[in-house]
Image 1: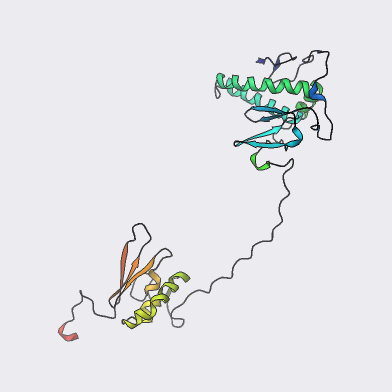
Image 2: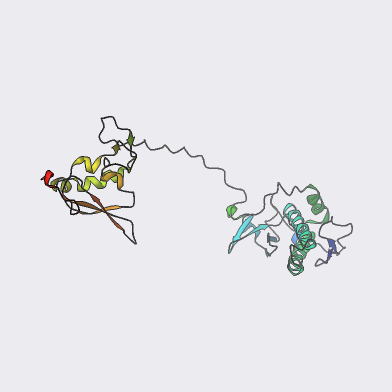
Length: 278
């Protein structure tokens, strides 16, 4: 498929090389070629193009970095290498049309945009320079414009940072510290702190430290009655009402389900002593 380019150029094939004689003699020197400075942008104009082939021209290119972001779209200053890469992408778009992965209407919109970029590039850089860029292009190695490069012609060097020191490991909690216990329930420091906050109140009501703090048992948690309140408190739970018979555990919002951890060492309403126990 061929495409008509704007200005003084003849048709070119999207997936082929620029044919000989694609630029006609105009008898004038383009103002776009009047430049100075190492980057060729101090005088004249520059064209910025995005990967979707939208483009805009400026007569103050030295005000802008190589990559410029506008409303979430990254535009790159057009040079022969970028032109060659955009032309390569047009070739892929043409193949997508042939395989019916891209509609002809969408391709026509891309083709129209690319025609404008092609005409500008021919007048600005000349056929020989563009042809050389096309022949030397390695599409896999070419870095396309990305948002992360805003404000710089070159990506910033990596920042050397010292590796973060890991905080010292918290000693594992054991209660009781001595004794031959087969199983140990891992307890977060926050659970111990929550029990510490109600310790004095609970002890005054008849609770023992064993029923508040023990995390070691003869059976695997939660079997048996060896494990204390501290083993049943998760990070996002808190302690509610504290009574002689139970301590309330309140779940996280918004539901805040309430559970009761009962004290087996005191009388409970559902326990009735037999005559032999009296």
